[in-house]
Image (cartoon, rainbow, N blue to C red; front, side):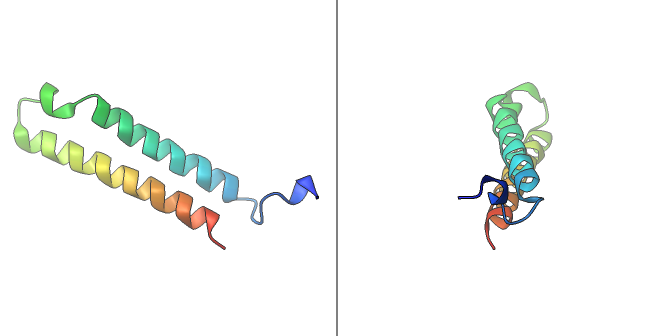
Length: 68
C-alpha cells in the first residue's frame, strides 16, 4: 500500500479540516446559549439560525470533500 496516495485530491484534507472546524464553531456557538445573553429575541433567533447554517455548510463541505 502506497502511503503517499492516501488522498485522491490534494485539497481533500483541507476541505475536511475546514468542514470539521465549521461544525465545531457552530456547536460552540450553540453551547454558549446565545438566547440567554441577548436581550432581543430576534437577534438570538438569527444567531441560532446562523449557527445551524454554519454547521450545515461544514457537513456539506466534508461530504463534498469525501465523495469522488
